[in-house]
Length: 108
View 1 (spheres, rainbow, N blue to C red):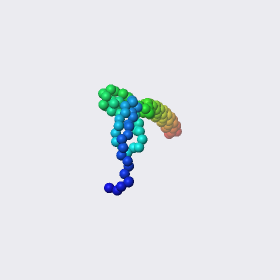
View 2: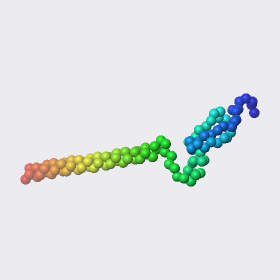
View 3: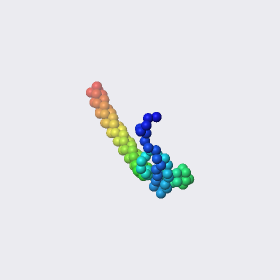
């Protein structure tokens, strides 16, 4: 191995948000802080605890609500468009019927 190129390996203190402290070896030169450790993590403790620091669940629910509202608007637009097309078709049919009646009258 080359000399003087490797980081210094030393014992440092790891602090958790729950207050637990651990001493372990690391190349980090200062104290390390973490949010969750084996003393407070639900997997190790068996206690269910929701850790949603950034509001991901609320953001997801808001997105879903917005998507559903948009889908409902699109359905209404499609129905309205279909009604307009049906009205146009019926108007065209009436015009054609009138034209046919006129041609029949002219033939008589």
